[in-house]
Image (cartoon, rainbow, N blue to C red; front, side):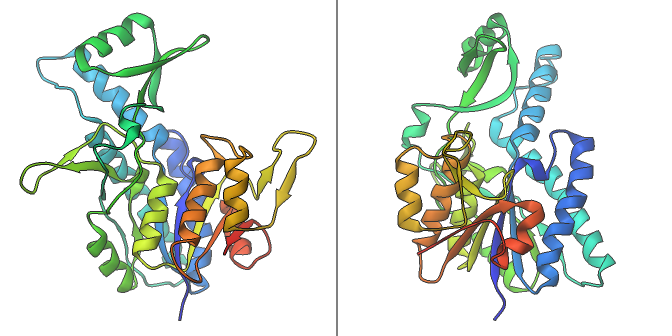
Length: 313
């Protein structure tokens, strides 16, 4: 039986603007197709931090410059736009790379909604920065007109922050599973998925939030009954004491050890900690499940046990 893998791509796999993304996805595709060529069944989740911010900024500028013709664009719609255009570039790059190697597989991007709890405490304490920095006057207009929240940086100014709730059920999971089990390469839960909350009837309403893509990848891996969750980031291994004299790189951790180190503050709150926590949740969600954190370029070696930080029961 072939190995089922959910891959969470870090921002370095996509670049920060359109030209960078076009170049970056070529390298990303080669690394992923290495795994496909080895017989792995792959589903891909990607981030969208720079991209959704770029879209939100562009839509805000349109609204400001021509309010008669453009209305404010909800963040959930900006997230949907980012899923579409990132998926477009990524699926084309994967398809081209597979055809070069004689691999005949379909690739599809599924525009994915992820249900979140409207009572999640994250909505009371927005912490996820989005978009560009602005002046106090610009921020005050948006705070007054749209009830935005901001954080202040004394060197760069004001920046919008939104909630980052935990993912719940994946709305399109049956579609994703059908494609996956039919042998297709699926790109899903882009940017953590479009966060939605249920309303009266059957309507799902977009929430002004951003779901962490690593937790979304973990939830997707659980629901697809994957064997392995791979979180690809900017470092080859996880470290404790990072950047200090006691820095030590880790090859292997049990889920209990990883949780203990995370609780002790060994991993950065907005960087490595959520990746480790997502891995622990996946490993503890079922027997025989394994997680790996490593560089994109070393994913194949990581699966073979030659590098990366493996987290297991």
